Image (cartoon, rainbow, N blue to C red; front, side):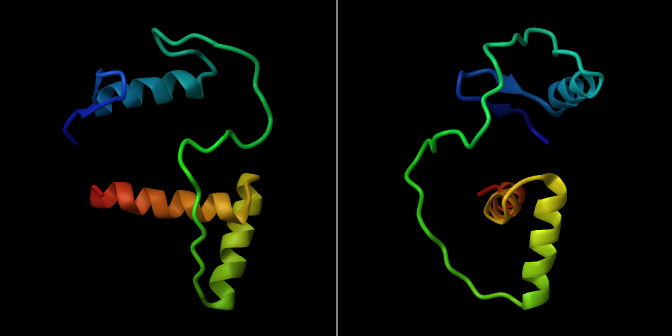
Length: 93
């Protein structure tokens, strides 16, 4: 994948992301990272206005989403948002 430009203008490569993941998997801060404060429980404020999307899906799929969300310790809405976001990112949207 080509490098992507972060909000601060830095170019981010797959190799950089892999290095960050490896450091975090070892419970270490990646080079250049620092703690900016305590962990705060709860959902962060939305950066943009939220909108409601209603859809119908098979009951089995809803149960699977609920089960996966519970196993990850997140809400079904958060799980669905992440799944949709992952798909949009994969499409380059």
